[in-house]
Image 1: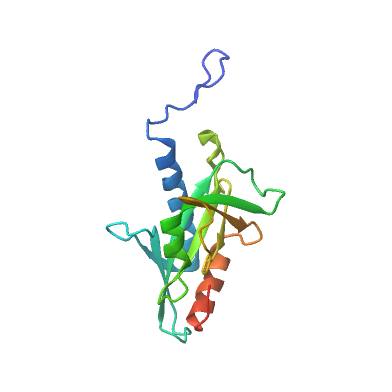
Image 2: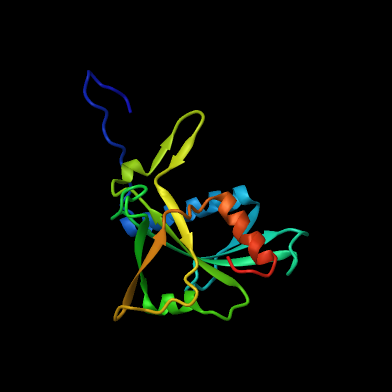
Length: 182
């Protein structure tokens, strides 16, 4: 922004897109960056069937198939700060969504990716000449076998020890490629 006569720079004119939709776009961007660094492709189910993305990892070293798929459900929250001291982030899932993610007998494994996002939209992205930063972080877990605990929604805890980055995604795909679970 231009400093006119010593005045403080004006805040950028942000669009009117609702915050929930902005959060979805930010977490999609995070997932795209992780998938790109891991060498994966992504597909969005159309119509949306309760899964946000299907990620595919191709390698001749996979034992089960040369292409391994993983279904991903994204959730985000701004009610936790970065790296919460309690060691987890909680997100609410509808019981129907939890039942879909928690199925034990599956051909394609599923994970939940929970992202902590700053409440202040202006703090979401920072760019300099040598770095582009998305704030804050996403964590992952498999909820296979979990049972709903609320009437309509269940609060699901995701450990902050499981940062979702390209290395974690590669390790998940390698385990699945050997016939294991995420």
